[in-house]
Length: 85
Image 1 (cartoon, rainbow, N blue to C red):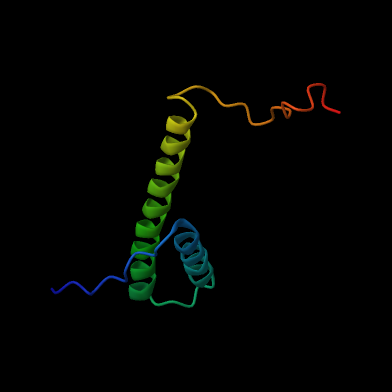
Image 2 (cartoon, helix red, strand yellow):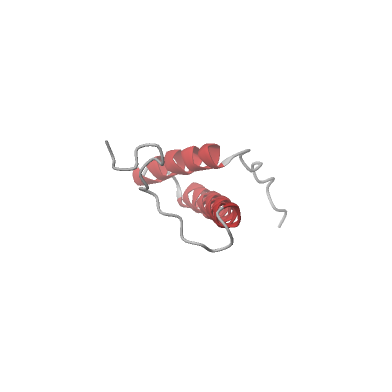
């Protein structure tokens, strides 16, 4: 059986996430045929994997930029303020 041409991967994380959210909405409506539901599910898995890979790459980049695994406090006060005022 010939494999259908898969839609191309979205260019960025936000686009992939938006497509995944729209796909979930269509599936939750329950009006798709079994075949269409399976195709959408397959596309959703691919999009979820793409999003996960993008998040992992971003996390790795943050770790590299922050000094190889050092924990970076997210709520540090500005150095200029000193006492938070």
